[in-house]
Image (cartoon, rainbow over the protein chains, first blue to last red):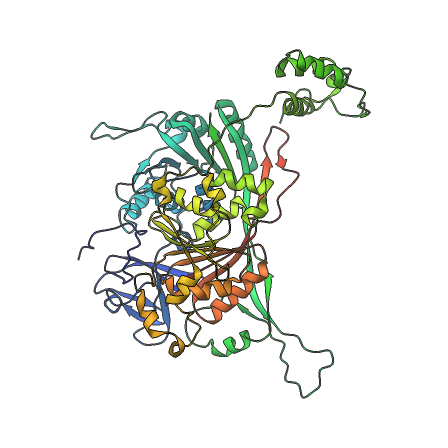
Length: 326
Length: 304
């Protein structure tokens, strides 16, 4: 059965009921979020049992806890959000994560109606966030030099994400061929010089794309380059200065996560009959689905709340360089 | 990498910093300025009268020129006030007016709150309109700004920074205001047992219940736990809630409260570490000074 009108995943209807054709994020635990498209007759399976779509469509709301048919456990049905989409993506390439994405969107000052160029498309993680900022009148022109990835991206945009008409995926090596684009069938010019509001680059040799970017950007248009290695950044920045960009600024951004713990302390003068248990239980990241949390919960409520920095953090993702076309 | 001319072969071993290198006095420079000598020529004149100029490395010369230009040949650019520009400007000059909200955190806040054109935002903040303006820039559907406090008297929202955006009237229309007391009359706190709430009042405003799909708090006078309890019914299930605070512990308490009561899932407590880099040939390194306080961000999703 065909899905009915495919609205963008970011269309927030006032009605909170889950409908057939909706893209739903199934929250199993903090580390496990699955994307499923609701379809009558289909069944979602996980370790807690079966979740027939028919029990959810037109019956459950977004934000609702749903139990499996076997009552072995539950999941939450959630609306897609940018951040959750990034974290639940089946990665085809190294992707940008939320902290960097947020800086790109904010510092490029993306607004509805803007025309944006991006290369490479990769897994479409950033593309999705960009499109959300520029719809409904804007357009994203995204270029990918790997044919398989380009096709998969096209499928995602037009299929489950409902972005048809908002994005054009082009299979091309932009380092050699630039960003100028013409529709082959109708001969319409899609991307001409001075016609783009913002360009985002995530390429192995960004310095070769800088002049191409300059060409298609309008005056005061913004460029953002993401490179993991400082040598690439140096070469790209040198090109930017030469070609006519100004206010060239390079940043690195990392997110520092905190775990929330409960601490209790025994007394130095503890008497044998005191029932003090020094327990450190963690809330936050590990609060998973399913039964068995009740005793943990009682212990969690004891003691004082304290913060613990996470030890396993990211040390580096890449450098973000922003520049404005003069 | 080949040695850069004028860099490797020079250093500062013979340069003595005793203010005698420049032969022109300040009085003479002022006289030249008054005579109408323009920035570029003036700087050239100063360089010609500097004894240390030829001893300097090429990089040192560039730095010297940059310093002189800041003093004698100032250029400035007129920029349009946007959320980014305003936030950076206030962070540099008067951070207390925006409760120390830094630009990178503002960007993260909007991403975690899933701000887009369909957003119906519940905003409780004291940034004098900086946040409201940032949301309007993103073309959100509507914003309800809720004022807290004021006792019996209802305080109006302070909008001096909102005015700096130069928004069109049709954009400003998206922002509406109310006072928390109006909400409390219709939606008594969910932590009050059901049988103690006014049943009649609770039925009064179904239109607003579960309405807002994006929630942002940025306040220092009231504890976020109390704020969220007061407005919880207004929030649509599965909506993201984002709370900014300068102090981590306050957000820990909030997170604890929301997790234990199972009101919110996918909770996260984070801060941003951002460092700017100087990127120049042979001189690439992070900036020497850095801003150390991004503020802290709590985020989570409301559940039924």
